[in-house]
Length: 409
Image (cartoon, rainbow, N blue to C red; front, side):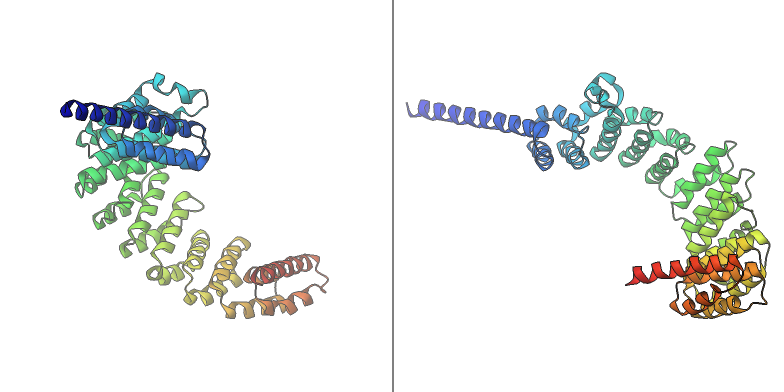
């Protein structure tokens, strides 16, 4: 009799708990659909902690929520549920009917790339083949997260697919493929990428150059220096960017030479990389100020970005002797250096009525850009001149001084 009572009570307790769990699940699912933003996010995470497979579909639907915070909680909840959610997420990648709920709202791609990301975080190898297929998806984010996830899962069978993805027209996807290759192959990836710098496909060479810059392997410096001379200037530009990321002084000379590439992506990225290398590049850049017109302007810009005061006097000399475009680059550089000596020299140029008019106009503009209040008197004097162009530049500079003073107050 006692045994029967115990069994009945146990059954009743189990039934009560089951009803409570069912109710909790229903409540959370309801909140996930209808609650306020914070309630939807909390409900998503609660469902993930419960681990009930019945919550998987509602959580996948929440990946289409209008609020990014809710989508993030839903994704984390699916990760929390782990392998139990893998099959449903794989269906999202390959079965259009699995995302009908998102298609009408134009969010199918949004759901798909999040599913790809979650699969990588879960790390189940059954997702690798679907993720490889998604490297060919039309949506950039889906391709990117598929590449990243293959790297997280450490899918060695995906290497050829990822190498092909290096040539992706979207830079982020190409970069993601490079990251995945390094994640899977480790240091061996550098050798593979160096070989790809010689690939006949220029897009592949661009992707390889980009990936080598993100690897922080000094072995890549010399091959990347060679790639600066690639017949496709976009390959050279990507190589220049990567050399800046690697921050190796061996690249300074070749990057200085690349400054002669007039108004090209290679010139711009070479200048940016020299600025990134910083102090070791200052003296070579100062020497480049005496080079060709194109190189002078790019070198001036890079020196301004570095901000080393050693460049102030050479830049000032360049301002006095070159064309308007170069002077503009010099002014921008001097403004970043914030060198007081430059202000005095600009005031002297503006005040010298025997000086060339175009040089004096640029000096007035420079004083406005430099933002030093000591220039106010000289600019006011220039307003009294008969040369209307100088008057106009002085007025613009005074306005700029006023703005800078107000911003600093």
